[in-house]
Image 1 (cartoon, rainbow, N blue to C red):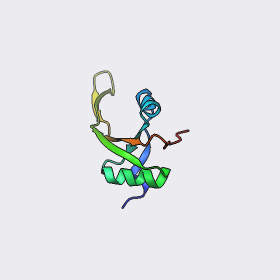
Image 2 (tube, rainbow, N blue to C red):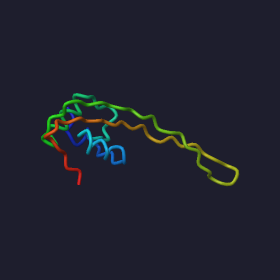
Image 3 (tube, rainbow, N blue to C red):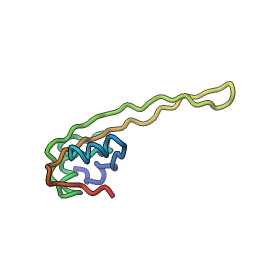
Image 4 (cartoon, rainbow, N blue to C red):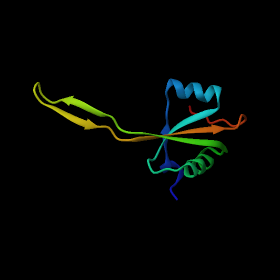
Length: 98
């Protein structure tokens, strides 16, 4: 079993994730690509000492971007895949981001 810090790669800080954390007590994390719901829930318990009610995972394929190398040449670059975890907590539990 991987450690909690290996599964949780960091917070996903956007306008939408901030709104979710304040209104629904739901937090968004970047997680490892091979992470499962159970592994994410255990990592949240270990690292933050809170009990998650629900964990939803979303996998995003990396986008393909076209880069201009010179005036006449271009190259395509593929961004890496990402995985997000939406973690719902009880009303009395909080995670301090800052």
